[in-house]
Image (cartoon, rainbow, N blue to C red; front, side, top):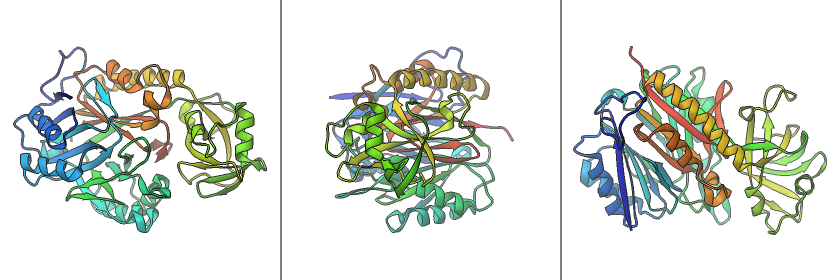
Length: 424
């Protein structure tokens, strides 16, 4: 089984229509699928062509051996830094997959576009502290308003399942920045949709419990569009008891009891894992009585439930006691409509700003195999953007994107970022 394709600046898989030409020899992007790790990397390298990359951003399906992937990249390009890591799947060039055998590569071949790389390998000791330390290193070199891409491995342990919480990392990161402000975008890295593991290419090798920050030069700007897909199906409720990511009570009742009553269903599984397929818990920001706007909500996936005590466990521990939340139904029709609207907005920006690269960070739960959508929302996004635009994406555990005046983790979103080099 083998599939490969390439689309890169200066070379496109279809004629350019109304999209602006991308500067040649700046960024090259390749996507390939193969069961053998060395082979899939070699195919990507062949498709990238005769280039001398300064930095490689690589997202590698979870069935591949990261050490073998790194060795194959070094055989092709020497000691060029490799950043990125595992992915539940990859998206690019009109194709996508989440078999675990996909690889996507972004090769930066122009020094003016290359980001600085900063790493922390201390997530296991404390996500907030590690995020703060990483941000202090970033703040010492980043220009105010710099674009920063942040990637980290999402799974801290599997038995019992424990995540590296993006909310703690990002909260620490904002604290570590001090007075400096950056445009922070990123995602959590997974090996598959079952949260089995995650690992990071950190610029020097392969590591666990790590986060890597890519700080772009001041001339690089980012436009970000966030696609959602949830709608409120309850009135506002108050979180009356919560412990970290575990919500015990809503309006003084067991949270699971309230959610089942509001949804009109009783969960089939004893651990409540099927709840993650139908609902999230959402916190509306701004005027609570304003008309529905998907961009006003921060939604949290429900990992599972405990029928014995009536609690539910969220993907992140950042909701607080006293917060007013709503039950949000995961709506596939709304998700696809959000993608259409978001992609149309991105296409307009492409025509105006002439970006050199698009990066799509897509929640793994939005894949058709998990969401039950009639077709892949990422395929719809790529179709409406046009194959001539260089874009790569990966399926993530959590997405980080601007929300209001700062960036925060989001769940069940598709985050499309367009990177542009602005003349000084």
